[in-house]
Amino acid sequence: MRHDATQGGMSAALPSASASRLGGPQGETAVVLPRVGLSGAGSGLFRSRLALARPVYGVLALGALLAGSLAVVVFATAEPTILVPRSRFDFPGWLSGPLHGVFGRLIANPHALSYGFSAVVVAMTVAYGVALASVRLLSMRTIVIVVVALHMVLLLSPPLQLTDLFNYLGYARLGALHHLNPYTYVIANERHDPVYELTTWYNLRSPYGPAFTLLTYPLALMPLPVAYWVLKTVTVLASLGFIAMVWRCARQLGHDPRFAVLFVAANPIFLIYALGGFHNDVFMLLPAMASISLLLDGRDRWSGATLTLAVAVKFTAVLLLPFLLLAARPVRRQVRLVGGMVLAAIPLAAASLDAFGHTIPNLSDQSSLLTSFSIPNLLGLVLGQGGGTPTLVRLGSVAVVVVVAVLVWRRGDWLTGAGWSTLALVCSLAWLVPWYIVWVLPLAALGSSIRLRRATVVFTVFLVLSFIPATSLIMTQLKLSTMNGPASQASLARQARLEH
Image (tube, rainbow, N blue to C red; front, side, top):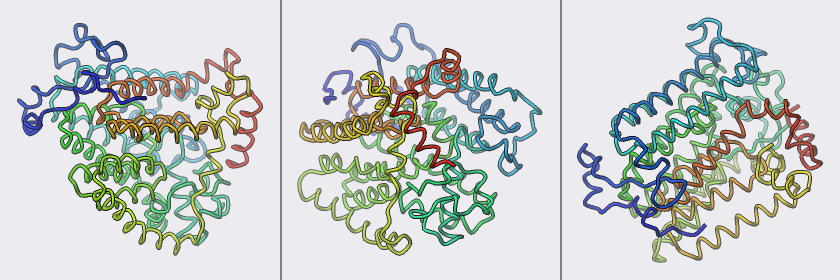
């Protein structure tokens, strides 16, 4: 996890003169792009002699990403399916979206749909690799058009795979409509509410940050269908804002923004799981990236203030702090950064105390649960511990602290250090879900380390293969399971209590 000073790793940096010419077509084609190779220093994700000597391959790859996303949305909206949890209980028009019924009845067989969905996600992963390999031949305009189109297509979809969006609305209605503190009460306390049947974590106190929770409170005063579409729309806009901040940071660093934007926005997990699931991670990533951009502009107090907002949305963002302090040298800049954090924390803390008292988000319950392919669970099985035991999970947390300390002490590229630390955090989580890789994507895209980019791509592939439904079906047919050990079974029992 050391800072890469290799020629390949440093190729992301551009002379300032080149950076100033990025706006025009000529500047775009003259820029040196970072490599994301998976093998030796002489190769990229695809070897240059084999890859993509014509722009048409990149355009076709972007078209495949758009076609795959559209196919998933069409099948998800057609009728109740496994793609949209809880849809078998109720699937009204406001939930299914405007494409419902447009293409008639499609595949409803769960197994066929599972394999079809899995094939589409794998194909999108291949297209992602092709797009990255050919990015130097794509114009920024083409990339922007496709990214916006992907967002618009996914906006038409009901939440894919999980019900987190309805959990957000459930906690908002719990607090603003029913006047129950979501950090001390659970969604099961509002069984009569229409959102109840669309949620899953009935007995889980809210794990979401106070800033995000308070921002969702106005949604509780709207009719549920209106709140649903408002939250979906705002999530898509926040996602576009996040990608715009990635673009801005790349320009500030003297990198080609085409690569940075495509590395993040074309990632199939970002598209299908993060954006398609309308998860709230983008509300943390938007101010987090704004904090980096403001620091690069020398606006240290504002950088600290926006980082505080990101932490108040999701505590994960605190991992940026030591690396922002590393970048904000000399000491007077660090003082301004911390001062901005404190000034922003005062009103946020006051609002939290007024709304929630001294209660805090419930981070302990979910962090004690295991998913099948989380690294602690797999490591526990390999070591004969029956899955991810609490001791292994605690050791993973300690390892993250050690990684952060070592990277800060070495004082390498601070964005690369933040990326490695975030990747270490994701690997340490007992409750690993695919869209957490989104936390790493912008840091890997903007940092100077080719090794970090390679690791991020490899981990993306691992998450895709781990979480597609076909993997579970094949393992069931082979009578294989990663959740048969004592620690895994104990986790499943805890999860059942929280969900029912």
